[in-house]
Length: 285
Image (cartoon, rainbow, N blue to C red; front, side):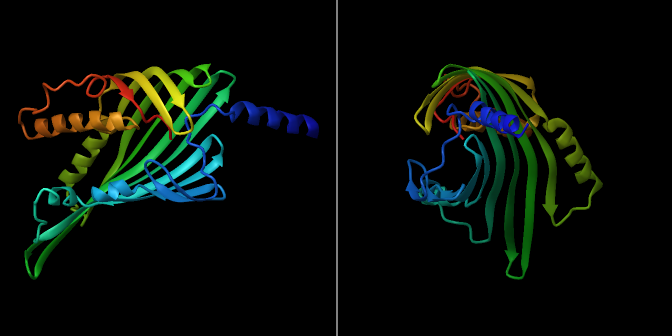
């Protein structure tokens, strides 16, 4: 019986954790530098930062823990100074207070392979917030903190035509858990606003296409997204650079609608970027 259990575990480990994967493998032990980050790798962990983002005022730090070769846990966060980039164009920093944005993301990503079939699962709780101070006078300073807690994730099924070429399809979704304000407004209207925001936040997308993996880090994904539930949290959809550009256009439309103004980007249509069919060159976690 013990031999059967051991053999079964070996078979599962070979099938479930084979080399086909959308997870960037761990660096060799010690310091490393790649095209986007520098860091240190040891044991089953890596600590890294993306210094190019520091230039833009996004001071960041990340931690990755490899549970197995194809199962990872990631924790990354940062503080954003929104006045760094404008300062490059001669805009002075405000002298009557400060404003900083921050974020904290954590996710578990798994890539299970069964022969030529794959199952990818991803769960990602996040916190996005801001802290600010307005100095109305030397002795009158107003401090405000606000953050939103969200959870997103996806599940995908795939089929490897070759070790580097994969057809895939799956579903993605997200939900707003809560909004916190400090100091607490203790206002029934605010509580009603949070409840309504949570109800309207749920979004869901169907996504399918084809991926080509190149080496340990690079890859190309050509896909199409279909909106199933069009919730307000849809502007956070996706997990790659192309999605983030698409989301920035969506967010501009949301702001324009809230302010009852015309969307300045409504007539801009960039193939594979602002459309539901998309092309991405960042497909690995």
